[in-house]
Image (cartoon, rainbow, N blue to C red):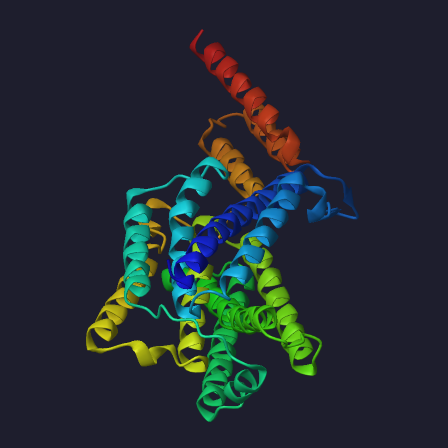
Length: 383
């Protein structure tokens, strides 16, 4: 059994653990959002509990860290492009975890989209690079200063800057009062957020691969890890991995997990494969057949991303709508649809609307009380 098979199995379990941890992180943010609706208020501002105080978030962090540790170990045994493509297993586990952990409705459209993504990534795994040579420190340093890699880094900076501008533009449109976001903005906003996160976060894969290579080199030779090069790579890994973790938490707090998680993983997978191709020159093993199958795999992945777009005709939203907004809308609709033909019923309706503004915790009780009053008022009219 080749080393790449060992690395693939380790990475497989690590990817599942990461996805499970990601869904638990989202569950923690959802719980925090629900508590904020019922929390204390000072000067009209809600006091938010620290996210670390929620047990689901803490457990999610542990699974996320454990999965990343397994993935770090796997990088020493297989090619970066192969292991990055194995992230497709997260799309399968994401459906299961989103259904059982987050109680999300998994539609046929989401299943079909995930199938396209898994099939595409399967092509990438089957026809990708199965080699993983061990490089010396000098060889790794030479690759970092290669003109092709430097040009790729410049291109990566341009992509990040463009999508960061698009995201900020979408945030500005969203902040305008009464401004309805068009359907493509509802998809473009999380997509741009994921691209920026994945482009920078994928660099942590390169640094992790380099560190794992040096660790494997030290185990098989007299190479010592306490060198400036090792410390520099470790620092860059911590910075990019920290950025990826921070953006992951922000994305889970802002967008629906069943949409943003696949986008995160697709962006991370795509840029990780590209970085491995450029830095380690893993494309050299691709012949004509492998190149065609690789392109077909990427096309299948992008089709899956397109199918993950929310269906506006069915009321799908990219971003979670606060529960309080939904409840207040229901209260106003109830008041508007209720009979207010005399001053007494009108006063009752105004009182109900005023009470609804006091706090979300009393909304349900107000609705029930108001409906009972309406029924009693209607019975009096009939009698």
